[in-house]
Image 1 (cartoon, rainbow, N blue to C red):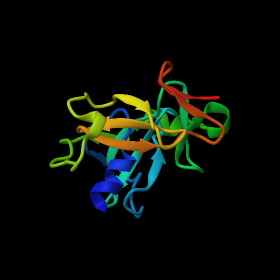
Image 2: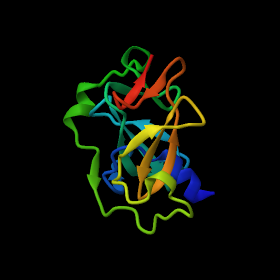
Image 3: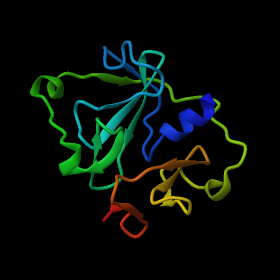
Length: 151
């Protein structure tokens, strides 16, 4: 279950495991929080600390209320100057031992490879040669040519 949950939370850009000042303190495992310095990024919390810094597909912002990458207008991201000027995360070593039983289309593919999910309007992103299903915002579907969720 933990491997599946971790896999579902990964997206196109993994900067490895992260350490924070307080961003994930007292947060449950798997919670997604907006990255305070960039509306297109978000943090996956694990054991009270940021575990991964991930980036939304091109043109999308992280929607804190729905915990998905969404169009800019619905995401309504607002950066605070005090947050932007203070470093929040520092990179540590990347996650270890991430494996999957069936890599499917992601076998041999580089991390961040994205393609339409045949079972939904979302997309699949490859991470550690594992297929990770990601949703698109309501009213959108993944466009392989644009590599983003679009109307």
